[in-house]
Image (cartoon, rainbow, N blue to C red; front, top):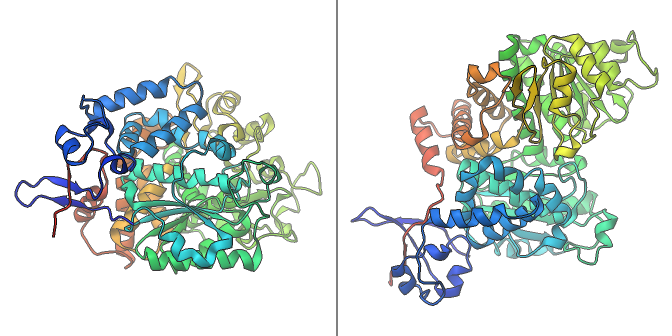
Length: 572
């Protein structure tokens, strides 16, 4: 296992890397490979003179060549496969190219294309990346973690593949998500790829199509549950604490039966958070803060309907509840303004609910006088009309769920309804921006979970803000690592939300934009990290340093993809 570490020449001040191998072993390592950018001196020193053609190219030349190849690919999945191949060859070039073409490439390396890639993962698999932890070998977990390519891991993104985006149980194919999430961490927050590690906990799959697929790459068994499942996770977390004690563990795309309880069980034992719950809630909260600036109203003036009560819906609801309490509402008053709707309709007393849903359950007396289309089920439309909803979230994965009646009902309750169809990939969105803007004559505020093209309405071009967790989780992770906190709190996520909204200028708000430009993601991540570090400092959980010092530490931690000079290790 290698240790990634930069060195500085004491005389010249030059930063460099010591490389312990030569020849094909060097070109086969994507962290260290420079391809045609190896200098003639490095080619001599590292036995590469016959490996490459004579010409030496710069990183800029390499990006020109690779972007030309990328652009020739026939569809998004082919572009994804090309980018994965590039990442497996040369990570510096991979990330530098992404940063040059953020808007174009982020939807390729992550949503929506990564969903298609996960579905086809066993068929497009070429080269391993990260670690696959077989649940049948969990007693060997220390040996399995020793297979990590680098010893100084700071970030682990882990999934068990049970709830991949809105696509369900994809088993080992879910590995595409941690790989993609880490790519976003590096691109957005500048964590060096050598410090990151994607992991799949392979506990089986209940997807019959996968189990019957002769090319399926995962454990061919039904998914573990109960004590057997918990034993695997416990062994895994305990081993991570031993092997990488300073690392942040991000839970990703776990099923609803496990996501909340694992997050709550381990949040005090290991530096960790769940992006599907806390990250989604935080970026949605940032949009809410921006919407309140546009409407010139407060959160406590709104009535919120959450269509979907899985991880995202409950995570958003919890953040809204916290925001309402911070505005001075009592527990009862805050709960009264939040309405959660699941498969069986509005959450009311007497339903069989999970523990995390209890916060938003309504007393039946609260809805006894409502005018209902069907007295046996309180539907989404019933709730919008009777509760006088002003803000609507969709996190169900039900394409078209926000139909004409729903959108028009929202417009009847307030002049500028906020409608947020957050399901992804794009085909799962509850409605499109064009649909909602047309029905409300351009009055609604809208943010989506997946990217959509601008809409022309009333002679104005409306650019829809993508409520992308990328705005939050990289900065939260970076801030937590830099300030050395031992846990990530809800208050840190709220601080991140406020910082994100504050970065949207008034001129953008006037055009209906509620989040910063994705092209500014590194600046955004730095400011989110600073907000997290400041909150950690004030709550006694992080290092005590002045704001300027914290920001300098954050910026120093953000890797810029460029080639450093290479030297052979000094002989002792």
